[in-house]
Image (tube, rainbow, N blue to C red; front, side, top):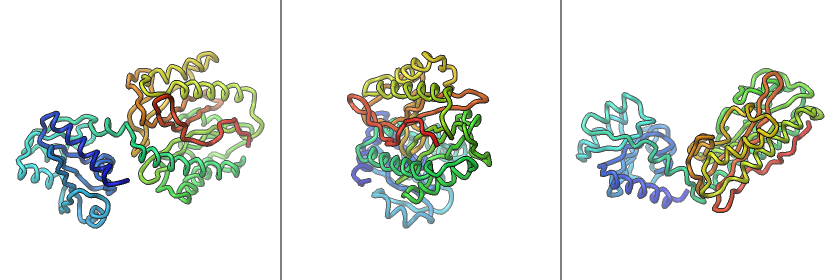
Length: 357
């Protein structure tokens, strides 16, 4: 990412400070620090001031790394970062300070409030992160390609007798071999009746013939997440599985066709549920249709039935309807898509035909 993009993000954040008449903003969530500065270490706090000044605090472990990764001024301190930040605020006579009230610990809040009045920033930075730059969308695209290639490599070798855990481990291994830092979230591999658990943890369960297999996976590459789900059948697909799969696929296609700039997130969810209702499967759809992603695997906006957020060009979201029948199994089909002015671009290249292994 070019330093200019980080500078632009800090400039916009500083403009928000001026609009709220704050003397400063303290950002300490690692993912938000990274978004504003490029610094990827796990220990940091960024102090922004309305005039555009930005000071990054970190500890000695990251002294070299901070100098390499960010164009901000860096202060390396020993001891708790909130204490160092609090002293800095006092020296600068910064009194009204925005803080990440949804992320900060109680202990950090107590320390920062010693000499300043803290005011909740709510989701100030997260709201900025919803709209991705072209450079960010390209990074997500590359992350998605890593995950999709890993899936294609592994799925060809999946056979009855393998365990869920073994398949998940191989997917994670292949993502790393293809350039990922690791999986974007714990990989889900669920076979047979366990595929009816939307967030099943892969275990020592052996795959069997003539059952569904659900795989939900994503890569983290250059800090950006991707997310995809495919459901396959081990053997010749049963009629019941085929009908369920077709309903879910058509629900996903209806939802994707609804995505565009200016559309309410809830409208996308309604499109998916309307199609499933035609087959009496809408009550078996037990989660929302999707979520934003980027530096985190779950970001705003949420694609849910009550979400009034208007989709905007530059947002990147998942579209992932599913149906889950206890005792039988579940089917979910998920793509990562980038919202455009007149629709969306599907970033997941993998086939969505019901594969028979």
